[in-house]
Amino acid sequence: MTGSSKNILRLAAICTLLAGAADAMAKPDPAVGRWGTPADHGIVDIRSCGGGICGRLIGSDVIRSTPGKKDSRNTDTAKRNRPLKGVTLLSGFHKTAKGWDGGSVYNPEDGRTYKATITMDGPNTLDLKGCIVWPACKTQEWHRTR
Image: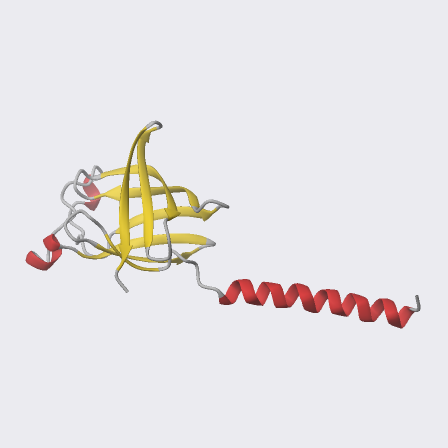
């Protein structure tokens, strides 16, 4: 094989890798979007964050009835005066073969944060599993709102 043939093969390999990377970057993460929760008709906006995903509370029955509602049950007393709307509920998740792991879910109903995993159950349903300590876990099914 000549030097120019090797260069052409290298260039073709590089182009293939770049095309694959561009294709992967163009596909949005299936969990990104707005999700309805079973508790208080909550709406959580899930976005890409630092190589993973995170989610913040953007609406609920409580927020609709009391727009200025505070995060009054937070175990961190310094956070009890912040508005409930916009509070980060999901953080620290990284992609795995089965979904997202290594994250945590904040529950404003009791003010505590739990270790959590997320798996997709179809394109418009996700399962959020929060654990006090394994196997003491609870799973909620969330549905895409748009």
